[in-house]
Amino acid sequence: MAKEKLTGPNGIVYEGELVNGKPHGKGKMTSPDGVSYEGDWVNGLQHGKGKNSLPSGEVYEGDWINGKPHGKGKKSLPDGSVYEGDFINGKEHGKGKATNADGVSVEGDYVNGRANGKGKLTTPDGTSYEGDFVNGMPNGKIKVTYPDGKIEEMNC
Image (cartoon, rainbow, N blue to C red; front, side):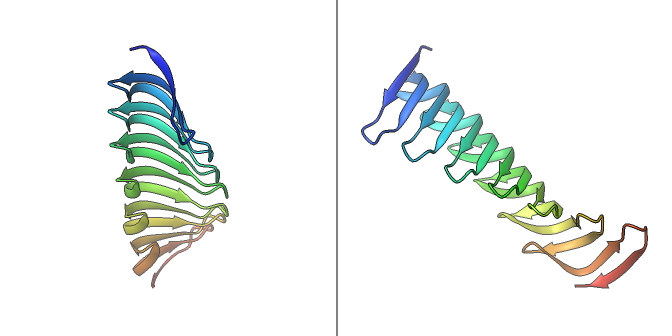
């Protein structure tokens, strides 16, 4: 496949491989507003491995299916927050770990972008909270482990 450059009427530029006039293979698309995607394409959609960058500073790098993050990936936000793990249809879904800019992390099960199911929240001082999570928050019986090794159980 030959590499080509196309410029659309809306200012979007695609440089890469084409099949039947659509991005297919390796290529990079950029828009005037600063959105860019570089990676694999199938029939005009992001599909395979790729990196998407937004003008806000948000970046997703990983697996794509039919134009959406799907599979293993990493999403970084401009404030320093990061989620690394499974994605389904563009949302954090499956096993993953999110760490916010303050260093608090939640590792475990994610459903539609939120911690839901079994998980472990760890604070920067090393305190951890293990148990069930609902909508991103510990819920029910939680095991708390402190940096000094002390362990206790509590209900949330």
